[in-house]
Image (cartoon, rainbow, N blue to C red; front, side, top):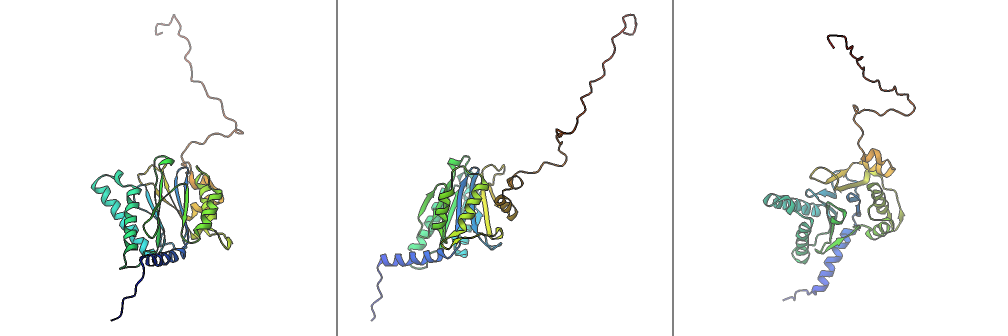
Length: 274
């Protein structure tokens, strides 16, 4: 009778962690930055059909790196959990913290189980608040660990160089245009040097607290990203006035003085109809 091959629990966990980290490092990085009006998510993603950044609920967004089929299953499970809780109780009971805890339990159970391989994914769960100090960003690793991030964070690919670049250029309260430029430049910086990422290969979305809709998630189209990176902030964020709106007169065009209304002459005291 052959003796079973023995592996210590420490070595088994180390091998599973190395396996998950290798799979995650092969993916492209995702950066998240808090700006003046919300939370920005940016990733290099050439695919137009497979999204790495998605909406979960009214104020909650999701970003991931790693194996698409694995984090897509987690995203769908998060949407179902949020919808069920919002329907059963109240929409205000759906929070990013509760969703991050659910993801942590799932990832931790899969990583500790010897029946299946660990998930090769890392996740961001962001929730925008009514004020910048109320924003929340959680980072979840393949083994179920949760970290509360502040200001900025990056994961996947060359996340160390991306985080270093953001740290050197980030400042609290940045506008969306400046935050997007910092994130794109950081994603293009790696150990081999800096490179220019085409706009068509960028995926960007925001949780914008200034939106009047209940849903604060908004995906940025390629045209908006290009205008923001080019510095045309007016065309990217400010709506054009309606065509029927009154136009203010120019300073070099003479304007006719206002005409006073006609005044009736004084009545004649001798007139019987006065």
